Length: 82
Image (cartoon, rainbow, N blue to C red; front, side):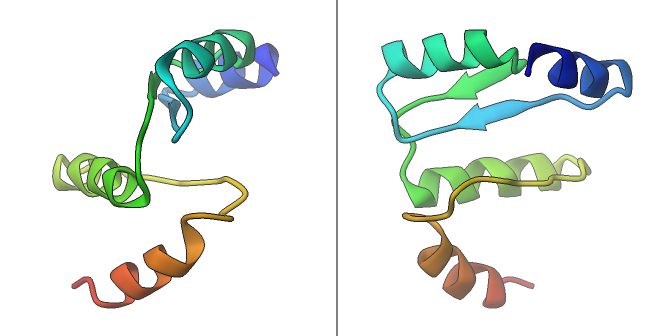
């Protein structure tokens, strides 16, 4: 996985893991995976706020995940967004 994130980095893509996990767990997973940064103890609303903040700075944002906790709320929130 480290190699894949390194390839994204070479392409100029910054990766951030946004998770509801506690900071100790999040830091360990982020280090093992090789992501550039992480945000821990994030609620679905926090995750959406981080994405919108990045977009407000003109950054293109892509998101992936299992969506178990986030998908239902995001679907409602994103469909109401301009």
